[in-house]
Image (cartoon, rainbow, N blue to C red; front, side, top):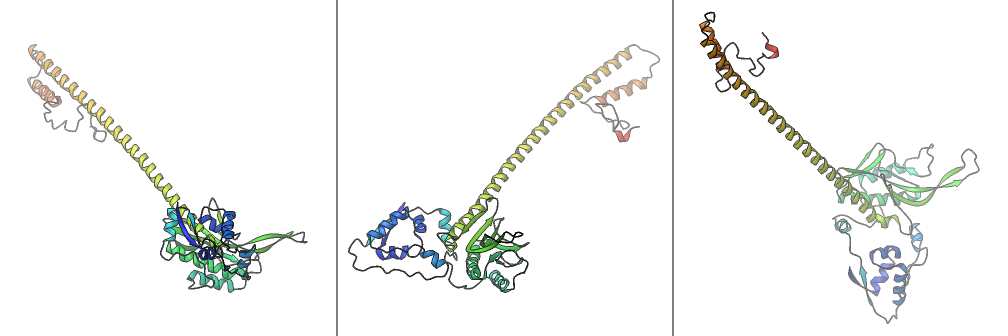
Length: 356
């Protein structure tokens, strides 16, 4: 954990630039501790309701820093170690956390949304908020909040592009995509239900003036105006978007690794089976050749024994034929036989498609 030295003037500017709750997330302090520090250094704090008034466009004057203070003019504040992802986001060229007070250099998507807001709303819509239409980036707000919503979304679009996201409107929804991860987003002014005296429609929707940005997925992340404005939550939005991209890509990487390992196991099993089958096949062939060799010896012994009987009925040419067949059958000789060229010597049969 590191520290930063702030002058009294710098601390005064800091506490009037953002709510104490936001500042305390940057420094390991509680709001009460920060209030005590400011009191000790005679630094006035924003009154209750200051940030809400600014949010609704009302005036809330900034108190002057009193003169005549004679205490310590500097203070060392511990700072929390910045997350690597947050550091990477903040150091991205073109990335900004500041939403301008006016719509400056609007993106083409914002120009189209602005034009859609200027069109007359459908008389059939149930929500008091006007939407941007199915072919525009997804924004829904009352005319009073439309400009603010457009300014926030224009800043988001610039940051999307700076961080390598693409923005696409399809089927009436808006998606931002990075590294094959698409996330559905929208910006809405929230509504509240108000009871009516109509028995058929006991409630009507009334806009709250609160803007909310949502990422629609299985966890439905939402950021909205509260003690801090939505404009001050852009960093959290991008941390969530980037974490989802990294999370899914890491899951996909692990899945690819897992299935690659399964495929390798399957390949090795198949290779092992092939080797076993070849081993059995080679051994069967060895047995067949040993059997044929033994049987060819038996044939020759039979021929010799038959010759010794001097049986006058045995044709002399037959002995020559029999010896030729023994040589053809013997695996150590494998003499050629034109007529039996296609015969399987182990089974003494013709191929099925070549039976005589």
